[in-house]
Structures are given as C-alpha cells and as structure tokens.
Length: 275
Image (cartoon, rainbow, N blue to C red):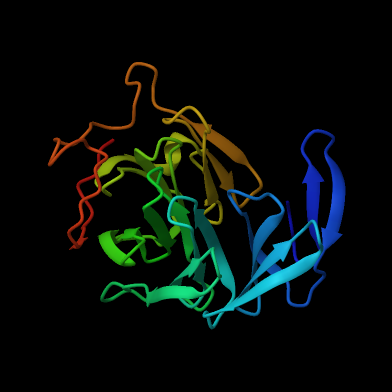
C-alpha cells in the first residue's frame, strides 16, 4: 500500500501490480496502516487531521475519527489491546477502540523545558513487541508510553541536534535514532544509551551538512542491523564490527532483564557517549 499525495494504491506483493486505487485527494493521505486482523481494513491518516477507517473490499469509509487539530503523522495498531494509536503534527496522541472506533483517551506530548517544536514537527508511534508499550518519536524527544493509561514512562531528550527518526529493532530490545547532524544513537528499550555513531563512520569526511538520515528501518530478523535513508537519496546499512557483535556495552541489569520497561514515570537524560 502506498500514497504520495495522490490516490492510495494497493499492490499485490506476488505480482507487483496495482490491484486498486482509491480515495483521491483532497485531503491527501499522510499515513497508512493495515488492521492486524483484517487486511481489508485500512486506517488512513489525512492531511485534514482526521483518521479514516476504510474497507477495501466494499470500497467504503466505515468511520471517520476526529480528535487531532493538524495532519496525522503516525498510526499503530495493538491487536491484544484492540486499539489504534494515532499521532499528529499537533504533538497529540490519541487512543481509539478498534471495536467501535470511539476515542478512549488522548494526551499531548510533554515538550521538554527549553525545547521548541517547529510547526512541521512529525510525531511517530510504534508498538513494542509486547503490544502494551509504544515508542513515540518527535524532534524534541524519544519516549516510551504505556497504552492503557497513556502514561509517559521514559523520555530521552537530545542535547544538540533534533531527532529526525527512530525505530525499534526487530526484537524491540534496541532503539535506533537518527539526528539532524547525521549522528546515530543506539539505545536499549529503557532509553539508556548503548552506543553513539559519528557521521564519519558511514559518510565521507567531506560530507555536506545537508546530508543526514531522514528515516531508519530495522532489519526484520537481524536485531543489530539497520538501514538509513539519507536526504541525498543514499541508503546505508549499518551493523556492529564482527569482533564486537553488538552495539555498545549492555548496562547493568536492574529489576529484571535489560529490556524490562518499568512502570514508574521518569524523565531520562542523555548518558555519556560510547564509541
């Protein structure tokens, strides 16, 4: 499924042919997500701040969700909780029931003191493997939220360049984050810094300041491998040195395994960089 400001196209992955197109703008689609239990149901975030629940089979909008004030920039389903989480350029999170599509709760991001979000700031959401906690990515912060109470459990704030993107590794044990200065940081699931990768590790020494990662994608089965999509159209795949085998040094185990997400609220601060 894809959209680039025009109609939404549904592709057959076996033949790579367009099966159907639907919902021509305006408003334009800004984010798409398949329902985890029914491939015929698609959540479509729109430029007009609504989320439309569309049934491909019958070519019909089943519901239109209203709660944001700016364009939708992120959508994520949790099958066990039967909810859809939406995020928008208004720095707001909304949780919707997938049973009746009513809004259950909403909350604005906790913008750190001294931080200023631009009017075009996207807010992205991604569920942890446990399907209870989810990652929130904004230029001013990376945060872990608990879905039922919509409570911020952990927050990491950059000291220097704004965040451009972040994602969980395939096993949700790590978080890969990219920054406007082309730096990459690797965190554990509790937002403790594991490793910092300087731009010179993957870019030429004379690289332009206009070149930086716009998107990070985790490998679907190799938890220590990820790809960067750059502003110049380049794609780089990164992994640890073979002699190390993993990113950085794991922090001491606290209250269980290193991937445990605690239930107490806490605002994190950047740890010392590891190279």
